[in-house]
Amino acid sequence: MSELTGWEPLGISVDWTAIEGELGVPLPADYKELYEAFGSGVFSDSLYFLGRDEGSAFDLLTQWRVSLSVDQDSKLGNVSAVEPYAIYAPGGKGLVEWGSTEWADEYFWLIDAERPGEYPVLARSNDIGGWHRYDMSTSEFLYRVLADADFQPFGLAQYDLGARFMPGAGAPFDGQAL
Image 1: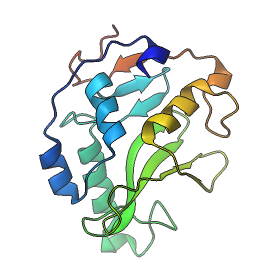
Image 2 (image 1 turned 30 degrees about the vertical axis):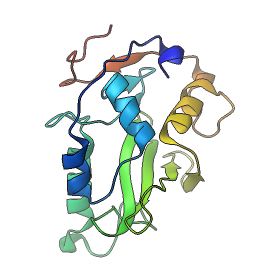
Image 3 (image 1 turned 90 degrees about the horizontal axis):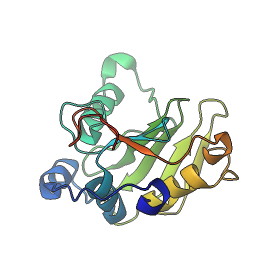
């Protein structure tokens, strides 16, 4: 990804043990490497990459906690915003969002506590509906979205937005492009 975006890896230090302890499962190794290199923020002015920036809109755990709370709220009935799935709850099976686009595309891992180490990417597009499963790493999926115009329906390269990265607010460079 650094070659694609021209971004110099930041080498961010993260307490992954605490994060994974709250989730009850390890996160994908390549995702952790991506975050340590980039931090959270926006690729190509439109793809939002979540990381560990507590209190920020780009914080993976904050977003997961809110989604889980809504998904488990009995006042809303048995309907989930991620039907036919559910938001991942520790020890169970479900989705954890790690990215989205300004066009309401959403990118999740399907996490199963009984199968740690398996992280298929599930994605859906607001325009098209339905879920798409990708048995590839987070970094491969992200690369394909940013660089492969034929990666339909999610390829952003077709829009010629360029492959650049802008850190999110609360990230090490506080939203300033480098």
